[in-house]
Image (cartoon, rainbow, N blue to C red; front, side, top):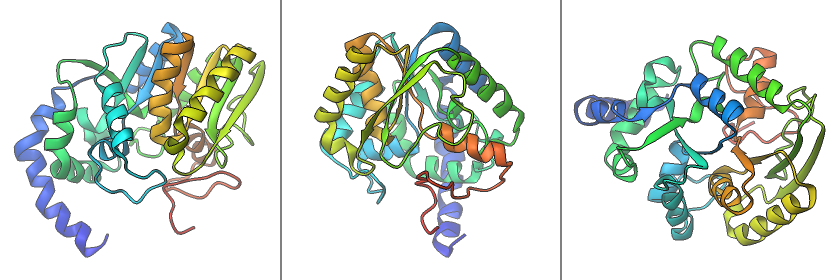
Length: 275
């Protein structure tokens, strides 16, 4: 931990407890298990909003793989505040209860620092699903949840025709058995960085691919662009689209029983900056 991070903890964690904790915990967010059950049993699409998406909404300058823009901010807000029943909106487990996460102090600090903005972005009267459906291993204290989520997902994928829309460096499901029993896999490859700048092209290519191949399920792994694309593709094609995010990387760590984030050969791991 850097000196600045330690100072931020001292400043912002008490602010979280004093000003924002109760309001965050009042948000109706389903458990991770309830979320994977709904996705696999009810056939809902799901768009995820982690801390990154909220920072892109508020254009706080993350220096990440997707640059801030008013267009991205506006579109993310549109999706976040939609009441479309076809697409479930997922929020972080940390909003409801950060104590089940290993990174609880990080989240308490971030909620203390950005709490006013994030709470203003959310419709506190809505019902939400759980972002940690795609992060069921590394950040959870109870690793047994990962067994349930990964097993449920693999069973759901059996004998299905899958379309994956991903960055060129993602390679979702390659080199492991996550998609071992699917019927077929087709892919649409997109820019690994600043994909939203090519959104219209990505959207049109995706619609064309869905019309051509008629997949049973569409998986999107493309940062905040996937959050938006999942929503738009569901409305346009009526397919089940899952904003799957870090799921494949989490599965790699799960298989290796890693207890910290490690590089994965042949796959982008955006949270590891210096390896």
